[in-house]
Length: 111
Image (cartoon, rainbow, N blue to C red):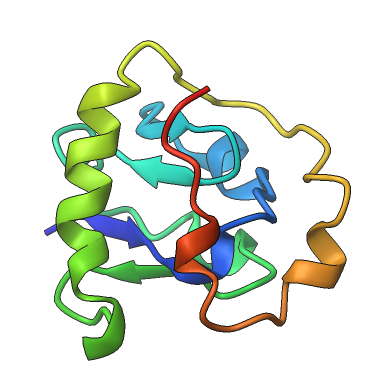
């Protein structure tokens, strides 16, 4: 099992979760974070740090976001050189996007 970042993170990118990860499992994209399932040790440290409740164990991801399991795996591989393990400022409009639903079309995969 590993943890998965889901839609609420898109266009927010709060990084408190990455800063507490003991194994540097987080990868950073332009407007989203993912967890590398091959690095995640299922410690649960990141879940409570996410202010938008975007992180779930892979066996508890809400059905509407189950495809984020594969998305995290694919993007973690694509962004393998984009390890993030520190707190950074969220995206400029993060607070405005935090409660927005249906924003998957806003995900940027390319830098």
